[in-house]
Length: 98
Image 1 (cartoon, rainbow, N blue to C red):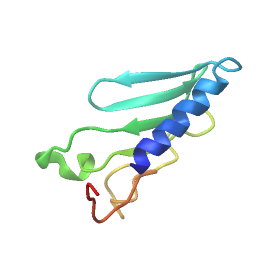
Image 2: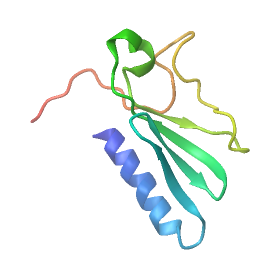
Image 3: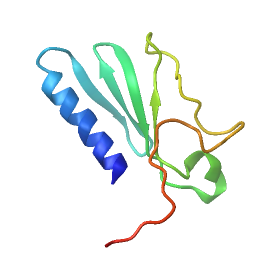
Image 4: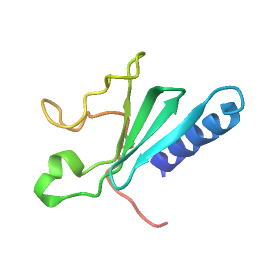
């Protein structure tokens, strides 16, 4: 639910600013979607389906943030030390339908 909230906030922000700036979304089917301002990438939402053979990289959706040039991530991504600290994500221990 938190990821949905963040996504909706980003969407509404870009929708309301779209008249003033050239924001758009660029999707790579099944893996991620990038938020772009003009020609510069701002953020990437990574949502690949969990693959048991590649669990560490695919088990959690998260947001990468790009640097001010729009070319490099300032968030770590999967792997290395503290593998769960990969970007902006919603952390939870239990979910229920109630």
